[in-house]
Length: 211
Image 1 (cartoon, rainbow, N blue to C red):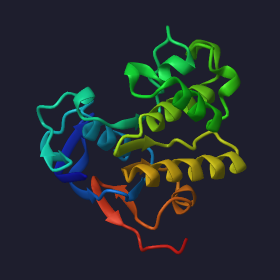
Image 2 (image 1 turned 180 degrees about the vertical axis):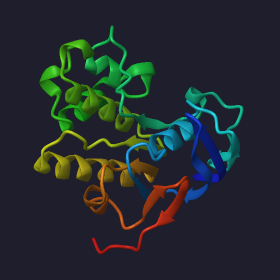
Image 3 (image 1 turned 120 degrees about the vertical axis):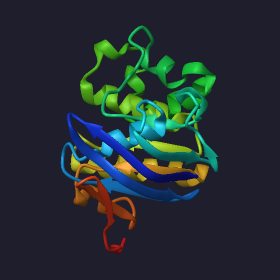
Image 4 (image 1 turned 90 degrees about the horizontal axis):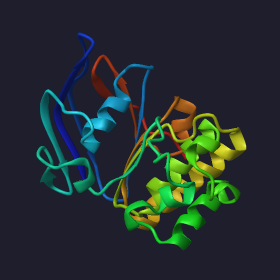
């Protein structure tokens, strides 16, 4: 579902991605960890089509997407910046473009703990609430490819466990390939035994952990 080969990217004169290769199959969740600034979010943005790689190829569902616009890639995406439409309510954001029916949007907002805020606009909620709304939007569309950038950040431990369980439930139900950037190894261990560390522009697979 997701196939990266030879991805290279330089930012600020520093090579943050130096020939990254990675495959994520349908129904599989792969977690990326690494230090701040290692290039994890940049890699997700390249897969989403929001940034261009200097070299290498991105294939989604077996198709090279080099000339494909972000909205044509059919992805469920949640980044650190929530990117919610400021003039729409949280409910309208989650159901944006008709990807999710009203009932589905409200269901996802409820799971995210935001049902009572459904009628508010992004400027009227906290940053953490906006991030959870962006996660609800990513999951509501039930896409077969998910890109999630630290969706559990700023949550209390109990809420982190609950949100992680919800994401994995939705991902498995859709049979989606999920590429998930985690804040740290502890968070990664909640999610999947397949964990990669990004350092020096290269990916290294961590030894599998028991779940």
